[in-house]
Amino acid sequence: MTAAEPGMATGDAAPSPGSTRLTALIVACALFMQNLDGTVIATALPAMARSFGADPVHMNVALTSYLLSLAVFIPMSGWMADRFGARTVFRGAIAVFTIGSILCGRAETLPFLIAARVLQGAGGAMMVPVGRLVLLRTAAKSELVAAMAWLSAPALLGPVLGPPIGGMLVTYASWRWVFDINVPIGVLGIVLVTRYVPDTREPGATRLDMIGLVLSGVAMASLMFGLEAVGRGVVSSWLAGGAIALGVAAALLYSLHARRSAAPLLDFTLMRIPTFMVSVVGGSLFRIGVGATPFLLPLMLQLGFGDTALQSGLVTFASSAGAIVMKPAATTALRLFGFRDTLLWNGIFSGISLLICAAFRPAWPIVAIYAVLLTGGLFRSLQFTAYNTIAYADIPPGRMSAATSLYATLQQVSLTLGVTAGAAALEVAMLTHGNARPALVDFSAAFIVIALVSLLGAPISLLMPRTAGAELSGQRVPTAAPGRA
Image 1 (tube, rainbow, N blue to C red):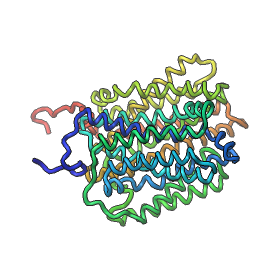
Image 2 (image 1 turned 90 degrees about the vertical axis):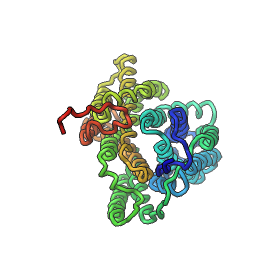
Image 3 (image 1 turned 120 degrees about the horizontal axis):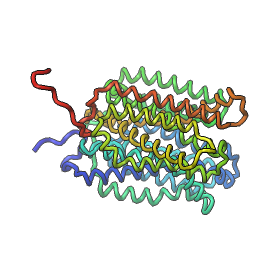
Image 4 (image 1 turned 45 degrees about the vertical axis):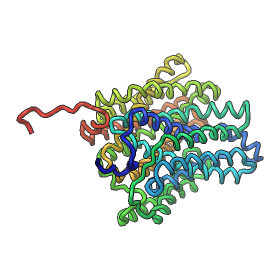
């Protein structure tokens, strides 16, 4: 009998494809709950403001407090998983998120709501990277592509389903149901994790890097607040700029600290691994484009086309439908073409689908708009799956928790940058065209900008070999001819 691999639960048998899929679905449901919550609350803010007797503009703090909590706690998720066990931390994260949701639904004042949202964010910060870590440590490499395909669905579905679900709950029930819908999902998740998810941990966990925690927390919180404020225009420009400057300064200090630390909280030496570097850099550029779309497209349909919120929601839903259709095909595509070529060409097609959105006009047949969004959803889903899988292709088992922490941290920043980039491009276009409020030509310019940013990520895949991740995808690797080196 061989010794257990690092990171695997001692005594656990090799996971079957069925158990891997079940684990992936459990993790995906938890991540969907978090992604849905992140967008569904936006629709409920006016009703919440009336309930609290507060200015609706000030209610944006309910969003930013959650994001800041995410930013502070995500970096320590890997250490927590190694110290206490991935299953234990993942289950605890769901419990904390659910308790935070219950408290949010019972809030009678804005300060109470903010405190509950911070608690919710602490749970959400652990759910994303630790849930992914659970899957990475339990899935066989041959099953990882299919498992990761399920994990990309929450990121695509949540931002699309959130607004219509939030609007329906607020209209026909109460804004408190926006939070209460998380409770049965959370309770079910805790039961399923306890019953079906194996416990994994990395032996010999190091001491928590407290200096790194403080510096990374200040850097992430300041950058997230500043970028979110710039993207949504919720505070003055000098305050947003000051927050960004503080975040950059803290990030530089963290960089100096990490070089001298034996076990930094966020280990940037992982960027020396080509497959991880390609996924982080190329994936970040891709996510900026994707992150701007849920911000720009509903505004374009409502302000440019004159659609209602419900009408725009029904149109944007097409992209999530495309994501669902791609799930069964992701494994086949990666096996046939490999990760490098898939990321290159599929990334180009994804960028082109964003460019076509710039040409949308009210005269377009609705079927044509649906076709573009459905096709774009197909491409984006495959790209997410490929990036999220190849990132861990060459990570040693002992560094897997560090990789998930760093990846989740940079992923959160890039998605926030998407809203900022979309808002900035729209603002510049309005100034250029002399428009006081956004016109269709301004939205077209913004879509062109974010599409170009997204396209920049595609050629970065050429920095890794054509056969990268072949063990994960099942790609057939040509053998050298006899007599050749």
